[in-house]
Image 1 (cartoon, one colour):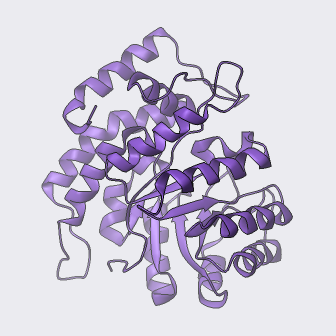
Image 2 (cartoon, one colour):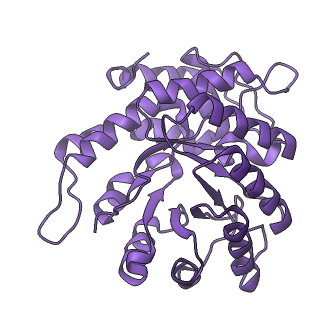
Length: 309
C-alpha cells in the first residue's frame, strides 16, 4: 500500500512573514524557504493556509509563489496553492502557477461548494494548468469537506487530478478508503495538520506530509525514520520504534501549533532567528502571551537535538 509517486516526503509550507506595518517581509520569506531546503525538505508548498494565503491579495499570492520558485530554483518540487473564493479566482491563480513553472497545484473547493460545483472547480483547474492537481480536503472553517465518493470519481475521471492532501475529520480512514477504492488512480496521498497523525497515515500508505515549515528539520528526521521501515506481510508501511519515538517527542510542538495556528508557526520561526517579526494578518488572532512564549521555548529546548539551529 506504499504510494509510488513523484511527490513523496516532507513538503514544507513556509509562512508569509510581515514587517511591522504588515507588508510582506520578502527577505524573511526567502530565509524561511532556504531554512526548509537546508533542513532537507522534499518539496515546498505555498501560498496556502499556513502561509496566511486567505489574507494575502491575489497580487501578493502570485509574488509569493514567484519568490518561492526562484529560491527553490529546481532543487525540489514546488506545489502552488490556488484555492480561491471562486473557481474564477482559482483558475487565474492556476494559470499564473503554470506560467511560473510550478510542479503542481493544490486547491480546496470554494467555501459553500458542493456537488457539481466541486466537480467543475477541479475540472477547470486541471484543464487550465495541465499540471498535477492536489485535492486539498479540509474541514470548516478552513474549507469544505469533499465527500470521499466525489474524490474517488474525480481521481478516476478527471485528467491531472491525481493527488490528495487529506486533513478532514478521519484522515487515516479516508486514506485507506481512497487507496482501496481509487486504486492506481490516486498517485499520492499526504496528510496535514502538522503531522499530528502522520504515524497512522504512514502505516496506511501515506506518501508524505505537508506541515508548516518552522520545524522542517524535525519533520525530515521523522520522515526518514519512517521511510526506512519497509513493508510488512500485509503490504502496509512499517512504523519503526525509532520513528514512533521521534513522533512522540514532537507531539507537544504539534499540539501547541494546533492551539495557535499561524501565530505558533511564526513564533517558532521568530524564536529560531529566521524571521524578523512574529506578526500575522489574521483578524482572529490567538496571540501568545508571556507564559505561552515560555512554554514554546521549553518545547523547542526539549526537542533541541531534533533541530539544526
